[in-house]
Length: 314
Figure 1 (cartoon, rainbow, N blue to C red):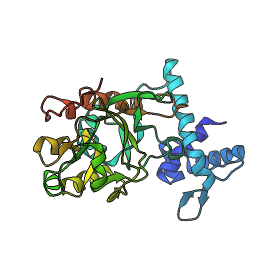
Figure 2: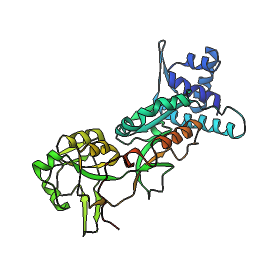
Figure 3: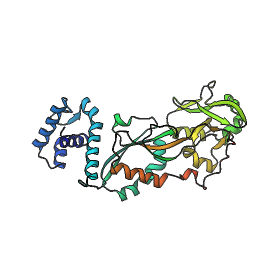
Figure 4: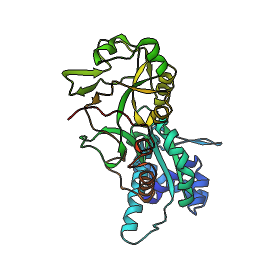
């Protein structure tokens, strides 16, 4: 397969302009069109829908695009490893992350990253719904996993400790639960399609889960910011990552509930990339930068944060 044609295809897909993509690569319009046509013949598929006014990706083109990006990334990495090509950090990095986390911790530190690497562009896909890295053509994603997940390819960013919490106003109105069983009497806020999480304590040998199977949640959300704001407004009790509510915990607008219980897992925030991907320079420097600015110890676990009560669990 002609990798020059693949490179032209990726650039044309990003710009939605074959002539402009060819010009970027030093090709005359007729040469660029001929090279793309040759690639389409090799693949046996039309990669673009063409009209006199514009081009759009075909279904086959959209399916081939993430693989085409990978082909180019591997070629570039191989040339650098052989002392050929350019080691300059550039290109567009496609990063998928939790919208809530990115708003709090990633977006504010991007200006300094661009000062260090002005030739790198970052395309953010922000959603608290998990997306496919391969199908979406993403270079990197931020994911929540337990430490035991052996399928992880990437680096740990920070621990993801989660607590039960509510607003003081809610607890004043409805009472503070003294044990897990009393959660059955409370309004609960949970994530859409959230699996029950096991709670443990050395004060009881009983197995407990949040949310309890017998309780129908009062509010179901699909992003952490909505959960935080609903909890702060007094809508109910939620299970939240500390990073999502650490400012509210410090201010006292949200307080911890049932601190003697903890989640029976080792959840953490990971920066991951597809197993097949070469770790390109743009991805490597972005990972290093996020770990430098956000990683251990993260701001939400520093001694400036409110001291949470520790569960008495061995």
